[in-house]
Length: 442
Ligand code: NI
Image (tube, protein in one colour):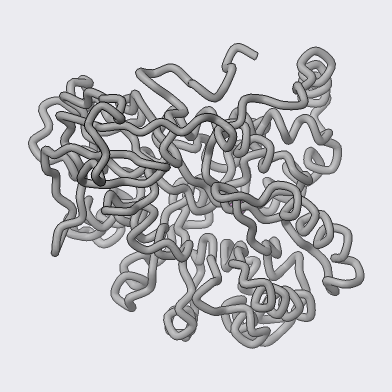
């Protein structure tokens, strides 16, 4: 590891030991709110649309009426001149990596992963992963993300950060090895232990084999069986670089996608990050399995891996979501930047301004993810009975004004700084720009 980075990290731990317990929104008293005067982003029959109407928040759920309760049982939130929309869902990241922001830039994928990132991970203390994860949650909340899917290498640290900050998360301990009950066992056990310790309404768990080049086929088969038995979702990095695909073809005589199919890994509960290098029947195989693709345009571009064939996925009817990947390869967790980028990249590639329109992109960052997580109509949408994960954007912000088309503004104009309040599970975690669940100074 770079000597100065090591010293920097050690300094952090020396002086900033985390306290045992922060305020935890799971135990915070739940308020009922009436959100008035806002412009609400709703799912219309064909496209997203906005309407001016009141929203009621009861027990962490959205209602379009007071559900028989007297009006005075709701605290009124004045959302005048604000767009109220579902919180963004970052479907692929590594929160702990935030301490490595701008640490390994302008290098190729293999050098980035094997020579720069992995050596740091090997020496990063557990508390480092905690502070990195907490910082990630701060950035995500600040820029309107309310849910993230995390693959981590440090037991319990992203769980702690999500629990303490009030974020919603699907978390998986990164697995590697040939045999889940042999060389993969200690990591698998760690994942199950943290699930037993932290699983709650907001925090759920996935099984997360790292990739086909770090996990053998036997382990992938075992993970697929364990996930089916436990009713868990699975996440994996897939076909991210040319080397990964070429090595798989040499070693197994098939693409990484075909390998996953043949190990029984691909199904409707499988979440595939990247899918940049699709060959042969790969796209048809993913469609057939009903798996979800998470595209990470900034990370793929920055590491020189290229871009995923987004239009082909959409044409095939595959469910596509959006992720930032970790801060060491992006280098932000800002989903607004990711939305703008994915649209612009694919318009440019296809030389077609109709490709990846704003409506499609906003759904990738919201409703599609809710569906992929088994919460269609509850997560990533504003709907009766839906989970109250909402963000409030200031429509008078210079970057948004004048809002001639709110959905376009979200994709092409917003940069995240317009988000001034964030509610997750019916509780505010940021209000008028101030964190309510995080001591930022600390
Ligand atoms: Ni990743």
